[in-house]
Length: 389
Image (cartoon, rainbow, N blue to C red; front, side, top):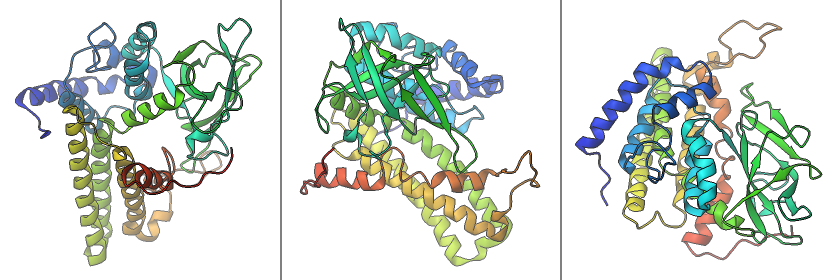
């Protein structure tokens, strides 16, 4: 299928661009902004027309909205994990009761979500999950014990979808379940922010107290957690990658301007690196459009497509951060404001880009894990030996 934007899509683009220009300044706080988006019908585009989401939208119109949002001055989304990861997973695997309970509050911007996958000691090995969930007497709910780490936005979230081991003695991808956990359980769930190189704390550690932390909702049935979790990871690499690339293009533009301002652009090696970054970004865009076009046609993206995408953008973004420091020379090591006891750690945009992008080849599945997936599931190479867990 050829992925192209129609005249109707471009009209939709004009509506989206106009609304964002008129309302992006209303975003006083991130939770309030989610409710503004929901009230205007911009959350849950293209969901099934059963009262779950807002307005109908084709796949290309969903791409248009994502691109226009990335181009606008609107703040980063707090609701994207619920909208772009949990919601399509519930639509694919949830019961009607679960859809009716959880999808409307996501579409309204009233409930925020975080993702409980990664754990200490397991790295990117999702099948190494040790967090456990045991049915309480009577079987009405589970008690969860364990720890998750690198949990984005857990400090803001109302709910967390958690991959946990519900079958005692099970190993690897067997015996796992996909649980929906309410975060408002004082004394039962503890969230500890993790300070990053950039000085911010978007990631968190989450601790579940097995004596008290309660869970009632299981998606896909007990023991089906691996299948549901893998389905979700496919959604993670969908439409949002195109919006991400719009942000990448803006960052590349800032690096080019910095190279011009510093005079580094006169260096032929620097010019070659800038052109290479631009060309690789174009390749990523066309690869993403090709993948979405195939999915829209019903063919699916094929095994390993999401891993290829992650490898492409993770390395690209990290190299851009390195280039941002190279073109500025020695001044790249100096902060934008004078040091003080009250504000000892100030960074400008390009410094934050460099420091944050160090994690791009690790989070969301390290490069090593992505290459293993491609080798085993696409190329059919022998499976990597796994140690006991």
